[in-house]
Length: 616
Image (cartoon, rainbow, N blue to C red):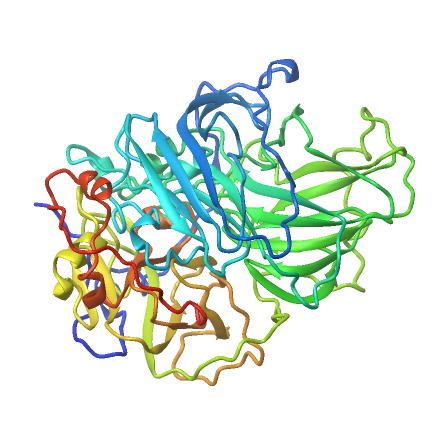
């Protein structure tokens, strides 16, 4: 007998969803909270460090052009080929999944209002999809790239052209694989895909067509893509991690710990690897766009002897302030300004540090490098072969208490305050990890662990039948929905019942962060005076957060933890916006064809009307 992932469903069409955890007692789960045991673990395998001269360096372009102020929108075409390569970003050779033979993948650079045509050729032996993180996909929800929700996935050997406009969006974001691993014959049928952990990631930069009033000036625009890195293929780790009763380490729920991390595709492990290097000119100011494109670990970024002036969080301009370092959770982005005016060093070079935060690592791992380095050199002051100092040298500024830090709980203020409409509705969501009757350790949002149906996509289900997701809350199989079939101002009141930290991401929106605090949300007053808008927000253990959206963007939008292992465990739900309008639209036939015979293409007009995005 197949044991369902759903332990309990929240039924009823009320606006508020109130969930209790009494069932957790019956499951002997101590209210669904994890129990971690620390143990040493070194997974066996055939991986080996390769000499530096054999290391395959996969490169991308990390210097950005400058948008032309007032430039008219244009169409920009990109061609992606997803395939296998053998690479060694940190000096350890392994199989990787990459786009166009590059890690990180190609940078997409565009202006506000542009149209993007991105043709993705799938040369893998499994389905894939590409998600455009942080973009609204207004009027084109089927191009969000979320397998099982907005598409059925690009089949092996086939291609798909994603076709969408950027509208008023601008800022720093990224693209990545967002697949789901389908199999009806083995245990992997319950495992979500983790392709982006193996290298299917890249930056997406959208320049404003007018200057942002109040932003400081800078001379050059640079990318810093940071990511934790594993020496084993993600599906191998995932299969071990999802084993009933024992998981990866003998303690279910112990997430795979990375081996190292990378800066712009380069890292170091046990004396191997290389350092990514920026060559700066003394006296110039540089904008560094920091992206955490990793799977699990938050990363602390700093440059020895340099201050960081933070000006952007995700894609929102913020009031500038100066910090010693910035902690970037998975999927978050920050922009910082760095003035090349550090005290002169003997080497003319300074360490650029990408330090993984280890508070979520539940076991020790042999050889792990948590402090990966890059190099900042000053032109004319440094020889290429000189290092800034010993590889194990501490940051000399770490003890300086005169400057603030930026982490997941820092209060960041928007540079421009957008009027915030009052909420007219509210939903309550809470999440935890629990053991099922099948002895699986899964993530639950409102007591449902996400597992989509093979060959189906919930967006297409709604387009076939607008009542598929009725108003309020509903559950279809192992998919939990909250539905609003009109335009409302809605607060989502989120409570964490877990002892771990989680970077949550909502598709289709950039919500306001209205409140954050310890414990569950039970009606506390909102406590943020100048709410910031961002699409990825960090919820600490046993905390609540309240976000606000306007339900004027029709679509089926995923809301999930962005830690890859947690999404694989089912920590995802969907928000269905205006299903009655979606039922009047039809997706492009090539997207429906991905699903085989599941859907019959219709002749209804596709979305052509302009939808107000001013509140998105």
